[in-house]
Length: 384
Ligand code: COA
Image 1: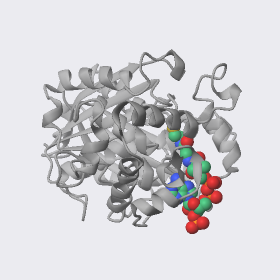
Image 2: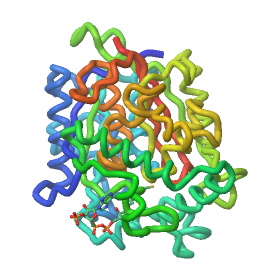
Image 3: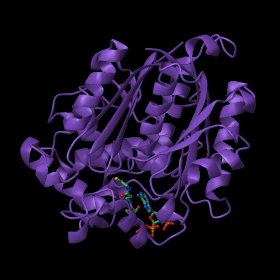
Image 4: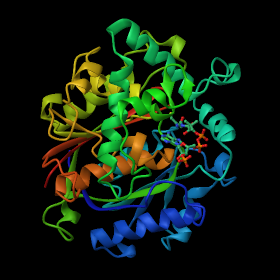
């Protein structure tokens, strides 16, 4: 399979008191259209990742609202929701619409505005992506779900508190070179270990922040892409899988089964193996999330992600550069935009345009998770 990415655009992630939800989307969209060098009339459809416009900003029916504000009506516009994997899933819908022959040029976007309400309310809204009956209703939040996974990983594999902290230290360092990142602040292991406790053993600096932001991609079919560029970045693999939402129903909470299945599908379609991946943007909503990801994606054996991180194997220049953008941890995590923003970073990496944080990679991967692992979406990219 081959689908071309011919344009990318992003807003800075962080708190945008002065910009609306639609302002953010249009800013990222215009950048992607300009980057692709296309005209609005070339676009045939839109797929928009958004987790919870209805709860964060009291706005539903965002698909046609965004098409209208972007000046793209009457093209068909579809909202895609899968909690924090909404963006990755929107990308998959865009890829499938091109591969099916239905469309030749589509916009895939993601947008979320999370900072207009208090943290307590945001935490409740995010928790709607857990199992209401068995988790959220009993007071469980996402930090606490990932905290339970972290404790179990430490117990089973000897993963240390310091190894978790090193994920955050690396991602904050990478974000220093990313002008779109929410945090430009280098931190140490001691900073992480001394930051306020959120859900034992996870501390403030183990958590991704609450963010506003948008991201956009322009996808084209192989034939159509030739009209706009000689060297697109190709999406060569796509995979998606589901698992139980509730942690207690999983066979093993320290193994992200949905990611194993999604990545198997993506590797098979791309005719690649884990060892071929040189750069990856993975779902580090919490530091333990990156360790689960690099294990389930097959970069390291199950249980060895903490040690691999400590040995520097996931740094830029290591065995596989993980989260060169700063990841969700330091770049920010506007939930509906995240999966699309991950793809923007991989495209910049493969084009050699990730200034200051280039990995010189030819093959890259994105990994976007909904909730604590109920949905997983993986895409594989190759330099044109
Ligand atoms: N990492 C680093 N710094 C952070 C941060 C984070 N995740 N979250 C907040 N900060 C900083 C702020 O910039 C601020 O710094 P300042 O005092 O220098 O301005 C300070 O910490 C306090 O910020 P505040 O906004 O009051 O934090 P908060 O207590 O409201 O929120 C969390 C902190 C951890 C509760 C919140 O970021 C959170 O819930 N994160 C997880 C989001 C999530 O679950 N996403 C979905 C995943 S599936």
